Length: 95
Picture 1 (cartoon, one colour):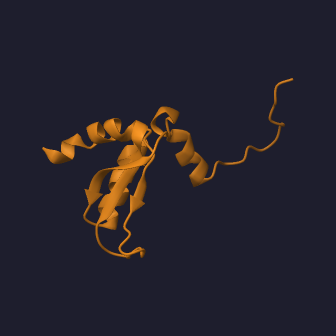
Picture 2 (picture 1 turned 90 degrees about the horizontal axis):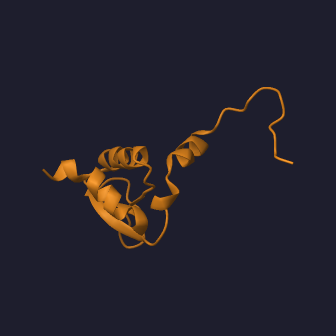
């Protein structure tokens, strides 16, 4: 018997759940690879949003000797299966 949601008020999806629904599974496999470098946190979050809109999950990394600084450059890492699509999505920046 299929699972059916009970009648009643629907729970609003959390921000985390909404973000997860945008991710395309085919872009979420493999080791993390660097596809870009942002000069600051704001630029990194902008790129993260652009990639998420394309269905590509990403991680922002800024480790210096094991510590995560508050300011400074950030590497944009994506799963290997989404690296080519991420580079294509970000290609406008290079021109």
